[in-house]
Each structure stands twice: as C-alpha cells, then as structure tokens.
Image 1: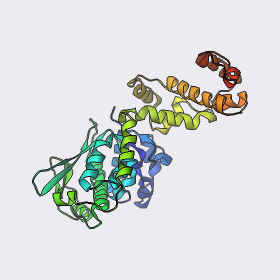
Image 2: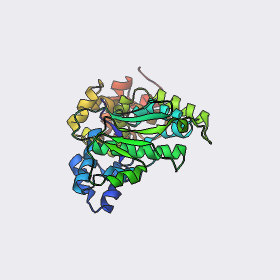
Image 3: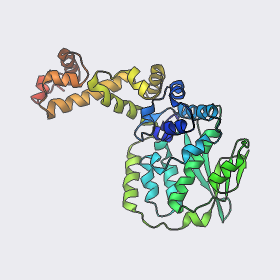
Image 4: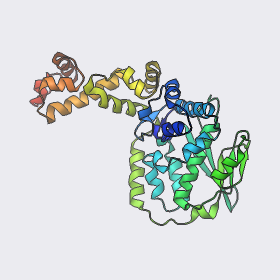
Length: 334
C-alpha cells in the first residue's frame, strides 16, 4: 500500500496556520492527526490525511498558495536519511537519481524523475501515485516548492528554474507563484515539474563525501521494501508504549492518525496482525531483560506491559518452553 509519508512533510504546519490567523486544532482533529507528530522524521502518517490537512488549511485560510508558504519553511532534512544521499552526491543529477531511487523511504506515494527533453534542458517531474485524492493542487505546490529549495541547496541560492509547470487552474494571485519560483509559471499543464538547465545538473559540486553516500545507500537498501514501514512504525510505537501498559491497537492507531480497523487492514495486507507484532516485540524484549539484566521478574512483567507476573510466566512457557526463571538461568526448552 502506498498511502504513507513521513510526518516531516508537515514540518512547520501548526505555526504557519497560526501565523495566518487560523486554529490548527480543529483541522488536525478532522484528519485524526496529532500535532506533536508533525515534523517527526521518524514517524509516518497516512498520505491522504496529509493531503487533506493542507487542503483544509488552504480553504479555511483562503490561501491557495498555502503549500508554497509551508514549503518555504522546510528544507531537505524532511526527507530523512535520503537527505544525506543528496548532500554527498558528486553532481545534482546524481543527487536526484539517488533521491528518486529511494523516494519510497520518504513516501511510497510519490515519484520523481528526470527527463532530458533536449540537450540543453532537463525536465524534473513530480508525480502522486495514490489514486482517488480529490485535489492534488496543494500537494503539487508543496512538492515543487520543497524541490526548489533542494535545488538551491545543491546548486546555489541564486538558482532559478527555466519554467515551472503546475497541473491546475491559474489562481487569483499568479504573482505570488512567480515571485516564489522566480521564473515563469505555466498553469493547466499536463505535468507537475520544473524545467532545468542540463549543464547545471552536471556541474561537480564542492564538498561531498562518497563514503557517506555509499553507507546511507547500503542502509536504505538493507531496510527492504518501503512498504514495510507500516510494520516498522507499529513496532516502534509498541516499543515506546509497552512499559506504560498502553501498547494497544487503539493507542498505536491514534499515533498514526488511523482508525484501529484501518490499521488492522493495513497489517493484514502484509500478512500481519497487531497481536502478532505485539507478541514478537514482547518476546524480543523479554529475551533481553531476562538474559542481560537483573530486573526482578515482576519488574520484567511490568516492563512488558503485563498486569501480573503470571502473564509473563505463561508467555515464557509459550515462547521458550520454560519459565522465565529458567530463561534467566540459561536453560531453554527451545
């Protein structure tokens, strides 16, 4: 399933809504998003919720250019580990190919590409892969606005695209868009993207470390398919909430801005269930606590989110074939 994006895609959202005279709380509530999650590069949120929350803000504030204002507050760091690939690439073209190859780590819902239309010009395209979203206008503006910032980071603050193409109707304040991009903007286009000078893309950049780029690339490749971020995020949230006794599907779904049934469907699509992931996390943590710490068995039970030590004893027999005291003593039935 492609319906995910790093929560960092909304970095600066809450402050921007307030500065423009709005109240972000009811907008976030309507999309089931938590304010404290926005801007977090380690968290993922539903792509549709991200799209809706910027559409709602643009409509409520009567700012068709809301996403451009948001893009102006963001930088390459919202991409997470991919940012290091870009920063340590030999040329801007290499950086863009690296970003495109690993875009799924930021969001499986997006795709970027370079198309050499002529020898002197290269077309950069930005595409949304999630079907059924009512309006793409704000998403395109945000994506192109952030992309411009990345180009200026890689190619110098004075960089100007040759043309910006946006596939929606011309808004009332066209001048805001041309000031933002500092070039001609074509609306009602058949694609979302920027036309760039090819020579600029191939110019060698100054400071870059190919070893860092290779290391991050290997790390992202080893992480597996980007779609696995659903299970990884659930595991992460279970780990965070386990000791509080609140590692429930309702709590985890709320952190992700989802209804519990939606999260269960997402996990089922990956041949997983919440209960199975929770049990796996508990087993891993139990192994570490019982073999690498001196915490009492009652304490281990509490740290695993169990209300009673007897729950740990039954789980230990199921996992290891022996009581937790035997696991601690180094005797395993498995």
